[in-house]
Image (tube, rainbow, N blue to C red; front, side):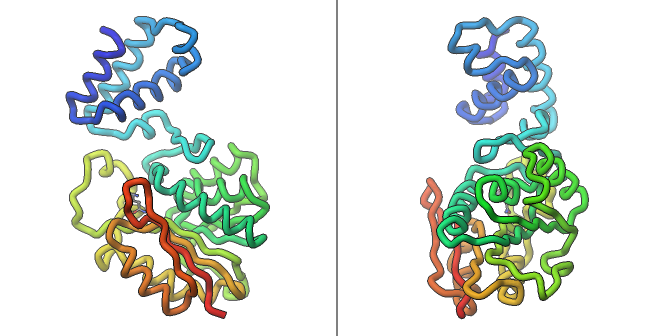
Length: 275
Ligand code: GLN
């Protein structure tokens, strides 16, 4: 048995080869302390390594647990974040959202940011880590907030990203104003058939009513009450939802712009509060 056989176990189960290779690499690094550097230096993968990885791949395939939950970590914008099934695994698409937000924050010297549905806190922590802004992350799930707090501690940015249990704006006071509201809300239409890995993720973080649009509608209509003058609203978008969300935003926001992801899908939308 060698590493190719392990990759084959994954591809035979329907996992794409590129993903399978990535997962094996992640497992080797996490459980065997065997990194890309070891590979380059020609260090051998031992039988013991193979035995360990095989056991992990077997449990991965037994119930299609995402590899990030087995490892307990996920990479996002240069850092490893703690993840458990209480929080969504950060997606590469969300890096487009956070990269744009950071650009706007820096260009305009924004100070106070609100992250709605913060989950693992990966958005809030990355913004706090890479800008001068202070971020409040809110979530309806206390279990998610516990993970977000662990991530803040890991990054050592305890006073710059803070968290509060709140169902959208329910625990935000009207006198608390923000320069930007950011959100990657649940946006998958209820009833959509998904790959089995997603069954392990918190369903509350994935699915939304009104064809996936419910949280956009609610956040857009309340956001103006909590934004400073000329404040920004920025969202990640679900597939095919840009027109509808743009229509919601046009009512209160100016110069609404959309950014596409690498697959040409409208992925991020942002705009500025009409003064
Ligand atoms: N981007 C996730 C997916 O496509 C969904 C996350 C969300 O609903 N915000 O699986």
